[in-house]
Length: 125
Image (cartoon, rainbow, N blue to C red):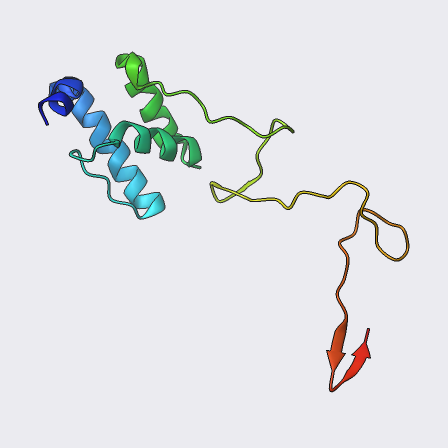
């Protein structure tokens, strides 16, 4: 516990603590997640939510905090081979990978293969 306290000595500065509280409040408002100052990976969680947010205010507050406490700058997560991750409302969308060489009945590789539909014992559409 003393190790954690020595790492978070920067939280004793009232100006920095105010910025952290503002980030926590904005995260709670946008994502509905309540972060506590005693959490083990608080810095990582703050950085993750600041990266996912749509709020410019949270982004500005996090940037101000990281300018004043440089060790809070955590490396960006690795992006996929296209260089851009698709996301919806801040959450990364898992994409299905296309299998090379797989084609459907017409020879078109871009469309996924459809399964047979059976209704009352008869194959339909």
